[in-house]
Image 1: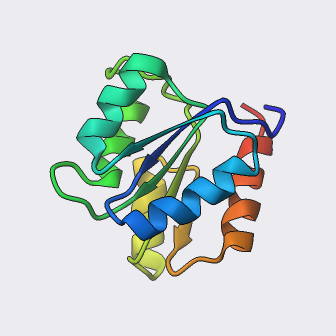
Image 2: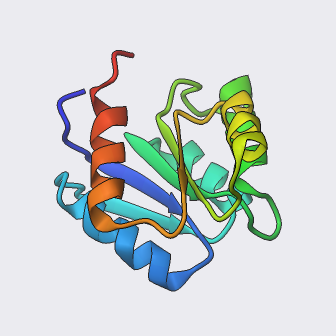
Image 3: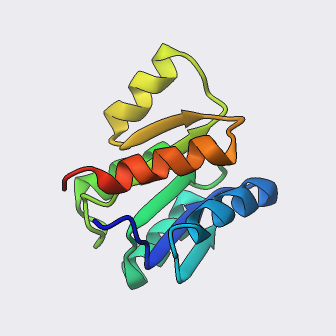
Length: 130
């Protein structure tokens, strides 16, 4: 990937966090940013148009970020199973980190998070070999 984003999906139930994420994605040239308040709506959006990256929260109603990640990685949702996924969460500690990586996220980041850290994390994920 060339550090450019055409379509991104934000899966976050907090309007303030969605705005922060939107600002970071804008710096990567994201021409289309889809917002979903939970994993179920994110999967529906991804089935319709795919994405270059997903940035999602862990704890949400209806379907949380880890369940959404597991479904994407299982490959049965009509979504590219290799889709880069960044998880932003208030869940902290080694157990939370291990659980997140076991679910298949590419990057686990604890909230609160700065624009600078989020930008660096997204850049890192985009620059990883597929």
